[in-house]
Length: 241
Image 1 (cartoon, rainbow, N blue to C red):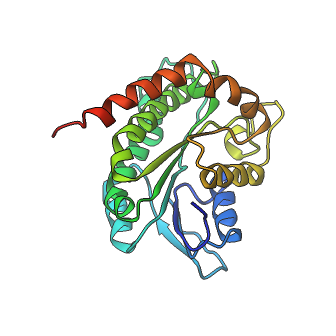
Image 2 (image 1 turned 180 degrees about the vertical axis):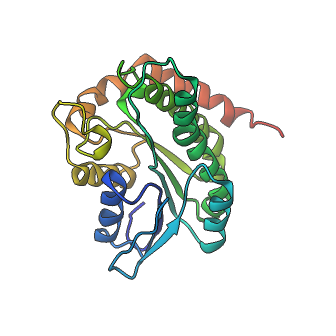
Image 3 (image 1 turned 135 degrees about the vertical axis):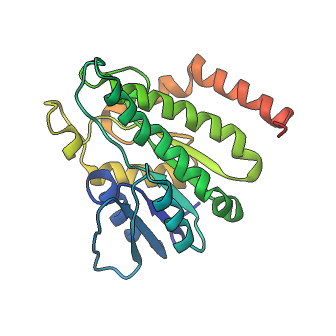
C-alpha cells in the first residue's frame, strides 16, 4: 500500500504523534485525512476534515461513521497515560476505556468501510505492551491488552483482506511523556516510520531508536513464531458465528 490517494482517519489528532501523523499523511499525498479529537480543531489544508471524536463515546463514533463515505486507513492513536500505583481501580478502568475499548469500538464501527476497501488498521501501542513501566502500570496493562487485541484482529480479519499493524512505540517527545527524563524520538520521525512500516507491509512496526533495537529479536523470537502458528489455525478453520 502507498499512502497517496487514500482516505485516512487518525484518532487523537490534536497533538503529539496524532498531529504528526496528520501532517505526514498529507505530505505523502493522502486525498482525505479525517482528524479526530475530543475538541474542535482547525487546519489550513482543505484535505483535512476535523471530527469531534471521543473514542469512549459511542454516539460520537457513530456520528463520525456517518460523515465518512470511504476509508482506507484507520489509525487508532488516541490514548491516555497517567502516573499511578494500581491502588485506584478507577484509573485502570480509565486507561482500559480509552486505550483498549476505545480502539476496539472505533475499529468495529469502521470495519465495514475497511473491509470494502481492503484497508488497513494501525494501532499505536507502546513498548510497555511487552514490559510494564512501574510508574505507569495501568497504562502498561492497557497497552498489553491492546496488543493482544491487535494480534487477534490481525488473524480474524485477514480473510477479509484487512491488514492490521501494531506500532510498538518507544519514548517519544510528546506531552504524554514530558515527565519522563530519558532520550526521546520526535513525533515527526515516529510518524514517518509508522507510514514507512505500513507501506512496507510490516505487521509490527518499531518506529524509533529504542524500539528498533528490539525489532530483530521480536521478529525472530518464539513469541512471534507462536503468534504465526496460532493465526494459521484461523486460516485453516475459520471461526463460525
